[in-house]
Length: 354
Image (cartoon, rainbow, N blue to C red; front, top):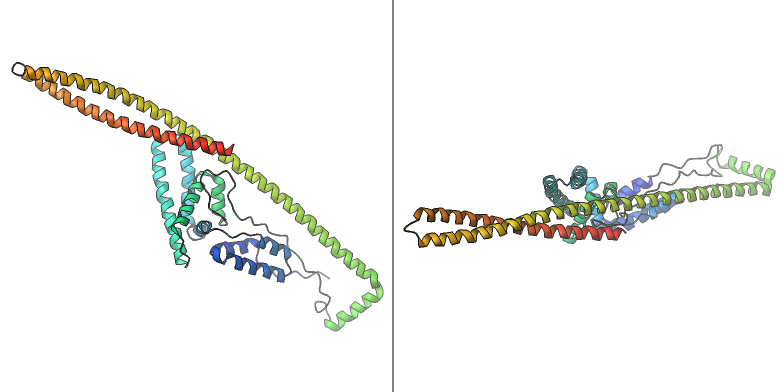
């Protein structure tokens, strides 16, 4: 007779979605309730998989909240990260500045929206939690692995930009479906009396040998399940190692690209600074000569009023040029400072990866 199939229970993915939809304060109690339900249903594999789920931090919960409540705005932000990386790789300065300004605006709005959603759910969060969410969103803009972790809706903790470890995300492994063994009563046709008669006839025919065969069948089924569980665990570990290695490779490539871009920007700004310095020197020399001519012209004012007027006009123009050159020199120096800081950060990120 065909074995009875257990009634449909929620998948581990469905349980995980329900758990990570709620605030972290309620996570443990809700998870333990699902574990108890799975055990009561005779499904230890599902109970173990659900019990392995870990509670998210408040910042991670905010990110998961955005995935469920504001998916379109979050998708817009993550798409912006692709454009940023393309602009950075192509050293498109104007486009990069525009995208950076847009990133700040979108990230800021998403952080504020996440805090509003948390407050509406009766779980307001501190400002520092918003800062952690902002760092996580910035990290997702620069790293595909972090972006995928955020999209999953099962992020476990905040992520810092430039990190070298895989993002903390809850892994959901669905256990193989289990089948109940036939019950020795009531489930067989004929009710309790027929089941009792059949059992006694079986005992007369098989006796202890029948019991040994049943025990052997149970052991064989347990062995098959254990082997399958070990195979699934090994495969899961292999996939996780491959994912971690891919994440490290992407992070290393991103750090190298950022270093190259920062170095090129530094060279460009240093060249601009050198040109501005030369312009300042030339303008200062011109100012000195112009004021000397003005002094001579003043002494001979009665004889050369027209020459004095021309010299004064030249001196004023030269002074304006000098002021403009000094302003450009200050801007160039600031740009060099910013570029040098970017190079140091990029080198530090690359060194961390190594």
